[in-house]
Image (cartoon, rainbow, N blue to C red):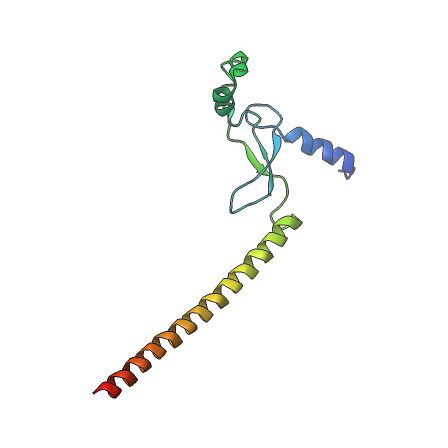
Length: 129
């Protein structure tokens, strides 16, 4: 079997990319905490009910389109390939480390303060007795 050219491979991938509604999915951007800014392919009919509630022009949509999303979902790129995701993961790791350092410093300061109050209380108790 002869190797396929890159244009043939891209064309085949494009042909395979249809959602379960037999529509071409649209490229969207995730806004979740777990995947901020990550791109994914989703059904073109996603959240049509929301649009229907917002706009009276959506009444013209056919009954098939209203509320019949197929839940198609595919990440646009592999998890390890998106540079923004890598940058955000590094930033999240750095922020977690900084939080842990700050928590340790706070715990140490709290322990020193409690020890200081106990010492002051004991000194005052001894002085007045």
